[in-house]
Length: 212
Image 1 (spheres, helix red, strand yellow):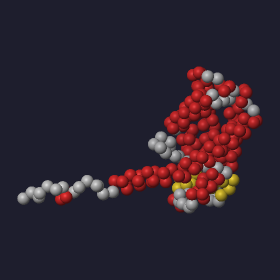
Image 2: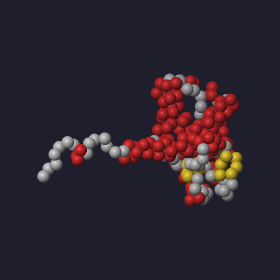
Image 3: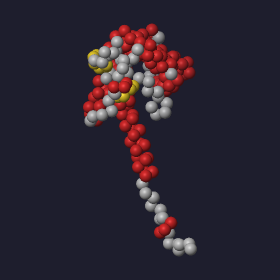
């Protein structure tokens, strides 16, 4: 998406895309989410925002603090991706992908995108509680207490980060759901403008006499 964010974990909600992933495919997805180049770019950007706004201030300031923030973001990315897209989906037999709906009213699609954080498709085709996402995010936040500053290693911090991450996931689902529509809207306008008749006078109406 936007020419730089690979959309590994989404698929259109069609029969062709509804076959369950194998265990190997789930771990492959998890590895892509963890170590694709875009993950490093995203973590670097996130760390930069935290550095500027002094997020998690116990890291301090300076390049050393930025490096610590970046390494923490990388660890969060890896632990979360491996749990949410690999380990838990393989064990719980859940499909970690987001299936883009693409049809229906704006309100119904918005609600669908948000609740996919909490509801997922199982390997047998039924739907149920998205334990991989919910428990995976919580476990990843718990793991982070092993490398966050001592002042941030609290139960309150774990649950706050958990809620924030679940909200971020819902927001990303909304972006995934509507991104294709955004592209179609932009390119449709471009095509319409390209097809519109020119207002320039035609050669026959130029006012010059016809050549013999």
